[in-house]
Amino acid sequence: MAAPTVSQLTGKRPEATQVYSLDDLDEHAELLNDIIDAARQQNIPADTIVAESAPGQFEINLKHTPDAMASCDHAVLLKRVIKNVAHQHDLETTFMAKPYPDQAGNGMHLHISVLDDEGRNIFAPTEGNKPTETLGHAVGGLLTLMQDYMAILCPNVNAYRRFSPEFYVPCATSWGIENRTTALRVPAGPKEATRIEHRVAGADANPYLMMAALLSSILYGIDNRLAPPEPITGNAYDKTEPNLPTNLRDALRLLKASAPIRQYLGHDFIDVFITCKEKELQEFEQHITQLEYDWYLHTF
Image 1: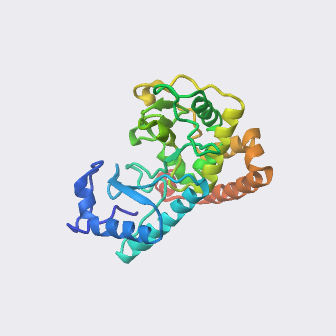
Image 2: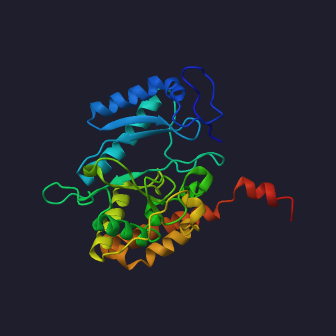
Image 3: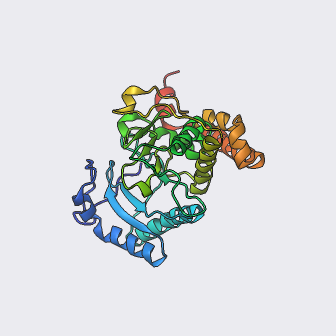
């Protein structure tokens, strides 16, 4: 069983969590500084690093870019940088969605906005801070199709083990203004930076496919003028019932039956994606785990 990394400063293995801890950053400062330096040398716009919820877990942010494809490139290249720099420090890193059963998993949050032909953010309010109708339609599309594209956000069996309220993972289609308990969050900030933060995907998601699914859903919502429900205030976990798929098989069934996602991403791609994932699922389900031996070997 893997365990959190040993501190480079103290030589001890962390057992507790301290979100946003500066001490945790200090204990891995050499590694984290080398990651940022290597990213900058490759023109990868890596920015803020914070200690996250699980021991040895860190969040690295990428700066905004108006080029959707380039932002996906940055995400993939940053993963390679992190893995290679960690290897130079005799450490291993993982973007596995749920490496430890009793700790928070690894997510990939995407902040997304849409620019018009003149470079203006079409989500930005024109009067006051009230969300625009276009932003509402985009949220409506993302919520309406969220169950359908869940298999793209969480493409592996392990990804569904992240989903539990106590580990800060949204389990229902929900949205809110500056609300970190919802699946979609509209952050506060300058009008020109108005955006939607999508908070569902695991770190094991393919960023290119994720981007395609989210942009397609936004287009679907705008084209069909889909009105979202009222934004949730307060704890969304207490105010919503879980309705997102909880396993890969159910998610694949929803993706297979989704006419809108098929229209935008193409029948051929969807069919090939589902075939590959069903094969992986079949192999997984045929594997006999140690827990099954512990429970059943001498029971029956």
